[in-house]
Image (cartoon, rainbow, N blue to C red; front, top):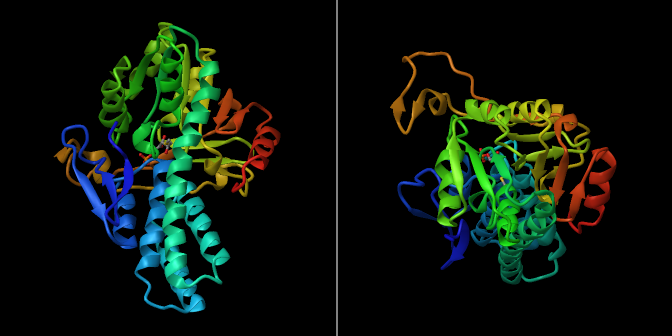
Length: 349
Ligand code: MRU
């Protein structure tokens, strides 16, 4: 499997997810500003991958600071971090990755600045490695919920490409396959940016996991035909009460699943929990460019001048969520208690 993100010769190398699946192009970021731009333009996307990119970006930002005085070094780093944090608003992993790096910087105040820079680089690699381990843990918990022969519907891309590797929702699917279960995936295309069609279908095909691409509007049809046994999606931010922000269209799938008595699972690491928010109403929803709606692959689909709305995420209320699969275990309703308990088991929640 191609690496989503890694350190190569002092640069942060990412596979350009705007070009997949037709071209496999890699982008090397050498500054924190380049990492921020890569996040904004969705060269890298998906909540956990954004968290890892942010941590690596902070390390690049630290390297570029010339001062050897800690107070001055930290003041400059904080400024850069504040800019990086503005790259995209919804996935809490961005702030999570930045905050963790800031904590490490603060804790190293007695180190010589060059040693501190080295420590920050190591921490960013640790965050990357931990993300893969978290996804594997989520996979082993989550696969217990998936039956042999299940047809699994997913929305957007919560796969290896959305993380440092293995994936969250697709990690649960991969772990189920690795456990010897026969799984068929239905992938919503995920308009407008087509993460399902372009990325989920691509990475599952690479792994020889059976996948059928459907348009978002076909989900209800296949549920009615009893061709969906379970839904598994990822998340960008989960509030304390279990309300889940994820790619636009997720809420619609959750309602459909409820109506058809189909379990609706969310797979996300503890780093995607935002216990500071009581409920999903407070989650900031990104509005992206109208061009993503009016065009597909640069080809215009709507009349010039068309008025367009483009919320990139929606919030699924906790009542529609059967369970949340985390790297620390499976949370079930009432989520306010179960999530708090699981987060308590995580060192950096
Ligand atoms: O806009 P994107 O592509 O960054 O949105 C991604 C999603 O909504 C994913 O489902 C979510 O980040 C979980 S990824 C493991």
